[in-house]
Length: 343
Image 1 (spheres, helix red, strand yellow):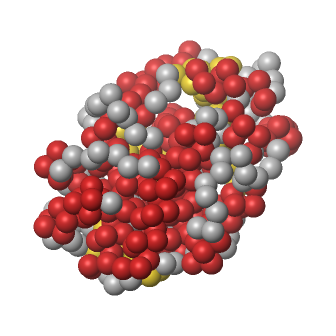
Image 2 (image 1 turned 135 degrees about the horizontal axis):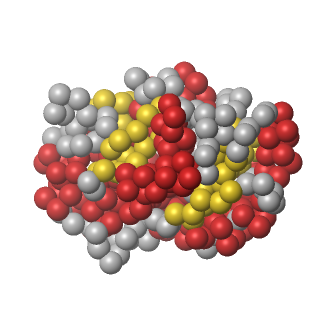
């Protein structure tokens, strides 16, 4: 396992001070939403010399319009290519803040300080930066690594249990695709939002880091990180326009059950493993009434892993092993949805 060189797991206050002291930035701003401004910014003690740029929280605000607002604020602050943007928040803040910083004046320095478990184990690692476009998730984006990522578990105490549980889905995914031993350890205990996350965080970040190091721009191996995400993203996007919105991890948990079913029929995942992971995920996340394929099937066409009009999946051959670029008959997806509904 490999923790990337630009990732520090530890005290964000001391690491950020050291980073700023070691570099000469003409201006510094911190990007927050209303939640991280109230609960996380006071813990960060970033300093009176740092301007605050605030946006509204939520995936529905990860849009070009919000980027325009941020760019205008940065322009009004007379920020330059020698300036620094600190992104203090979850995956939306990190994704959008990194995208904005990478495109402002052709690119400036930025630091991600992820404040959710989901962002710490997944969104902030690997240099994927994107915004949503016309209802399509992460449709416009680039690859660029932050200058620094600081994963500080102190922020997790500010989160409701539901947010912790959402982030936990990515930890489960990492185990299923690449860490058989970790999966066997994980499934021995029921989910506990109050556990000490430091060791689990380090292992999960290291696992993703090793995959990204081998394939930084998702030409092959890195696609395994998308297990559960092809159908999961479509379900997440579908629910964005309803009164029953799902958090990212909640949708991905459903996606992992559906794509686990596909795995048993396409890539050889044993039925016993499907039953085990299904039970664990249902025990952890409960069950959601999901629509039939017609309701969200069109969203699959725009998945970023697709090629030549074909929808590509990353599927398990066994626990800890995953194949990418797998294609699936539409009839089998209907079967997977029926399997989930009948669980």
